Amino acid sequence: MGQVKEACGVFGVYARDVDVPHLVFDGLFALQHRGQESAGMAVSDGDTVTVVKDMGLVTSVFDQRTLSSLQGHVALGHVRYSTTGPSTWQNSQPVYRSVGNAGFALGHNGNLTNVEELAEAAGMLPGIVASDSELVGELLARAYPAVDRVGGEADTDLEQALLEVLPRLEGAFAFGLLDATHLVGVRDPNGFRPLCLGRIDPTPGAPEGGWVVASETPALDIVGAELVREIEPGEMVVIDSDGPRSYRPFAPERIDPRLCVFEFVYFARPDSRLLGREVHAARHRMGERLALESPADADLVIGVPDSGVPAAEGFAARSGLPFGQGLVKNRYIGRTFIAPTHEARVDGVRRKLNPLRESVSGRRLVVVDDSIVRGTTTRQIVRMLRDAGAREVHLRISSPPFRWPCYYGIATPDRSELVAAGMPVDEIAGHLGADSVGYLSLDGLVGSVGAGDAGFCTACLTGRYPTRVPSAREPVASAHR
Ligand code: SF4
Image 1: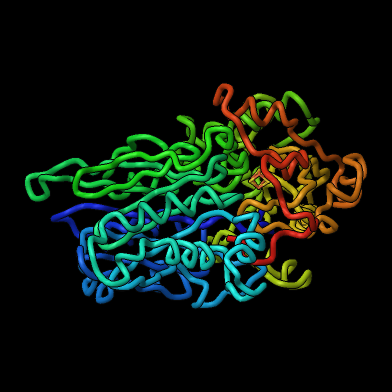
Image 2: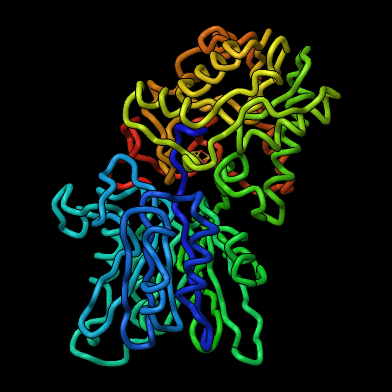
């Protein structure tokens, strides 16, 4: 799924007597796969909020000197992808706003679907707000209690502003926020994007321990935090010196858990735990189920690195066919080489993947990948394998056909560019140059996750959007991430 940019990553820490900026650095590093265009961090020492952000990977934005210069016990970090909007410093996060003598920072994972309505209701001219995250920052700043603009008790301002603004927002938003003395984690009523709460146990040197909010659980692991629980869809958790407390800012009828099913298919790290399930194991089960639903007569099963590999292993295990490595990925290219033009995308595939000739030559291959979006990458992979001597190429995809755009924080191409939107499945193999193509069914996908009756968003597969979406069929132009 290298043609689709994934969601952003959010990581926040509240802890005393701990080197909080370094923890945020480690947490963001663990979430680097969720966004590789910019990284940022806001840190508060209880009085002043300082923000450092820039374009680039976490390791290029923060060095030892920068981290050492940041002091505080509350911090929020963010890694970002931009899409239709420009990838600029101005759009990097956290977004910071000062309001009177107070200030807050916001990191957003998701995509609001009522940006234009919100902007209009707030009297803003169309296009004047750079991103939906900037818009939320503006709405929160306007909602800060007026008393604090001339000084006063600031501790509860951010909570009050959030309780006023959140119910007006629609779409996908997992927010991390901080002000001088609070760390906040919020999930939208559908919980499209993951967000979890972790606990850093007390130590003799840091007797209060600490609290963490993170997009994915591996970011907890890396800082030695235990998963307490996932923040629930429609929940706001506020953390301060009294520990966490929970709010439900949304009308009960809006609560409808719909975690993005592609978190399990592709976006999340394999060592993430979502809905109590390990992502790698779920991907393995998808491959097993795929082997049952769409078997192939072949000599070898290979996976498209990296996210196709667990499903390939599952396919091999269930089918009894040998599993092997047939494609080598350049580890230094980043997870997704995003290029603006068709020609550049083709080059990107060649830069990223290369076949193992001795493994594939003369073989009938089952090639397992997590999804096909435009088909450009897949067609290139098939050609590469044939050029390397593969006798047959049978594509097996561990998700159903991707037919609809995502409005919830994943940058997808226009529907006209989605290969499965424009042609029946039985024509796709020929279009991609493969001998056959088989997709996992929707029931097979959801069943493989193994999360009981948990609700999922499957809109890009089914066209059934859990919320109102913009009427235009193009993805929202304001600010995907
Ligand atoms: S439309 Fe697809 S990619 Fe977007 S949130 Fe729903 S399942 Fe995930």
